Image 1 (cartoon, helix red, strand yellow):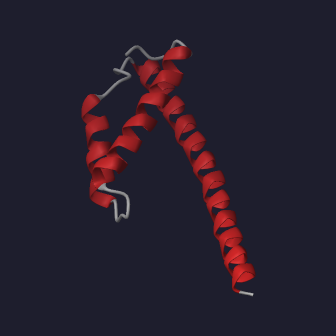
Image 2: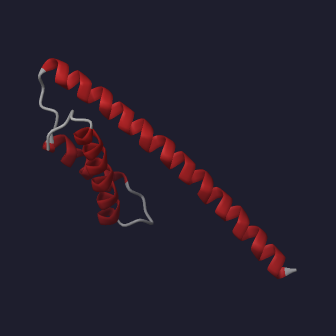
Image 3: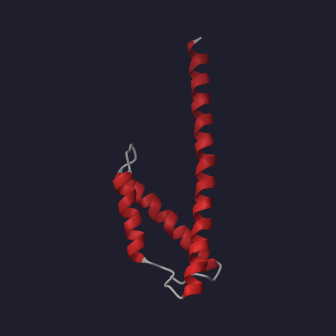
Amino acid sequence: MENADTEARIQKLRSRVDEVDRELIRILNERARIVQELLTIKAETGKPLFDPKREEEILRRVAEENEGPIYDSSMREIFELILHRIRDLEAQRGEFSR
């Protein structure tokens, strides 16, 4: 009976992981759409598209707000990747120069 209980618990946790993954995908795409809108406004008003100070502020805040168990440095790396990939997306669209 213990084996069946263990398998049920594993399946329940895997289901929760799948739900979180779907939510992460939705949120990352929402973030990318918001950035696209920001870039459109910046382009229309002649503002620089890339703001390294803002990016550093985001990365600092990520580490400050992180409650773990992911290490602050690892969380920062994850967000650096997110920021770079969204910037790559915009570069591919020809709207963002690195």
